[in-house]
Image (cartoon, rainbow, N blue to C red):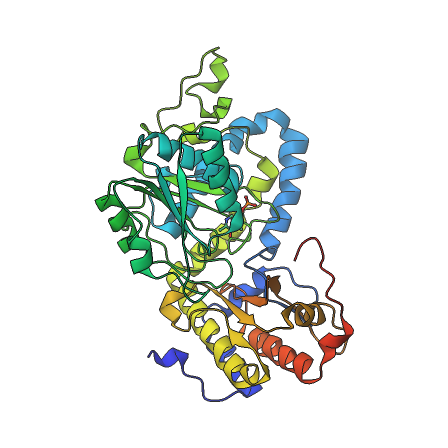
Length: 431
Ligand SMILES: *Cc1c(COP(=O)(O)O)cnc(C)c1O
């Protein structure tokens, strides 16, 4: 066991000391925070706003949209999807010409899945798992209905509700499998798949593999090329801090780009959009996976945080993420498990992404009490995920050890003092 992951005691002083030793601590001030008593543990749903983004967006609106108007397209706007893709490529172990920013994660999954299935005609099985994000499964279900060719979605069960056994997955990958479509880090439990062995198994059987990186990009190292991944999609508003509903990214392996064709033939997918030809000719490269005019303001907002993450380096981010999540579990074991909480994430740090789920029968009301606290109590923002998970996101670039200490300490107080009993079980639209 790595010494970084052994903690001397549950004293507040230890949390402060860990922050003092944290090489990434200085990056915290790059992010907007106006309430010192707000503990934000939800950066895996919506990352914080970088100050650099605030400045850049104001400048873009005034100088580029305001003054330069349409001339801005030729002064950098048109290249944004590729330029941002190039920066994301270094976070996911891909070549710069393999990643593109466009549309949403769900839409990109739709485009790439259809491209993949038409490259494996005759094969009828699509493999995913019960821990996958529902939107991904809905997209696959919709595609099967649309194609009406007898495809089958096979969902690998979870034996413990937290992990998927590799042997259970491998047992279903066969010569009739067209596509293995998995989320690298599970949104609820944070279970992380072994990308290399799964890609290899899929390829041995002639299947393609598509990874959803939404819950891993920016927090854990990803090696798409080394793992010989075929296709990938991912989100930029979580650990990448790109802003609410920020455009997503897609990855297509170099040698597949000129063969695979996605089904939404917008003008930006065509070889020469500004020739206004009547018949569609796809762009020869990654550009064919675009659809429409990129949403420039939202795209611009992605870049400053990417620069900050690249400067920090994914190895350091991952080390911090592991140490911080181990610290959270250490405190939870001491303080929360005796109060009826259970760990809803893998205990082995190697099998986890950067969030921790804690389960309790009263999780919903506890989460409300965390969010709606009145001073002097601190407010803590986690996610609630049905049926009983409180999900605590650790964003290595700005979550501090003191944040974790104060967050877990507050949860202990809410349960010990039964503060949650003042709250109802009524659900809000977004949880
Ligand atoms: C967050 C997330 C998405 C988001 O999908 P959108 O289409 O951007 O709303 C998709 N898949 C996974 C695994 C996610 O975690």
